[in-house]
Image (cartoon, rainbow, N blue to C red; front, side, top):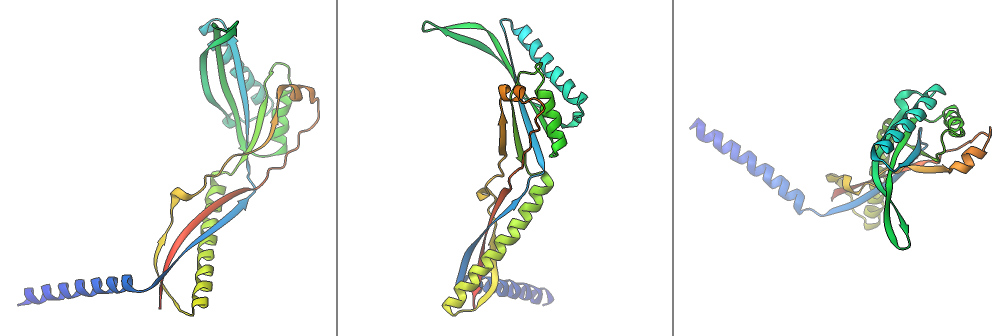
Length: 240
């Protein structure tokens, strides 16, 4: 008898829960998408220096590229750049061809690699890199870009989500007031990560070799622009 009562109680609880869920689903609802954009001044600077060498022999081409990379790294470190801020990217060697009288002729090999300087932006850091690049030993151009640090991305993302939720609430309030109905409890919240626009690098300045070498002792001053982080949420409310 006790076992039968226990089963009845469990079944009653299941029916009550199911009925409550069904009742919520049967009620009229309002679904609103909230959007927000939060802007933040980036703190991280990325300086990209493309190195390119050529040679008729593969081994010599590889050797030249490694030597050029080591020389640049050494000069940057000697000028006060933290070695932890120096990274390499896209190290590759390909066959090099020229076109003569409509014919494609192999002339050797071409190697390329990017030296990256990634660190918190300061004018002093930028000046030190520019000073090295003005040396005739390094006939390379460079690109200066800015991005949010991981801490900034997290903070900006959280703030944008808060603003998106507030936007959805504001829209829902206006709609229910206009329709003369009352906003009830939240039925569901949907946060679609796939619809979030990725945070881009913000290219601010591009310096070619001629400008860099002719710049003399002139200071290069840059002011990064704010980077926008976009978030969106969809909230469904029950209408009472």
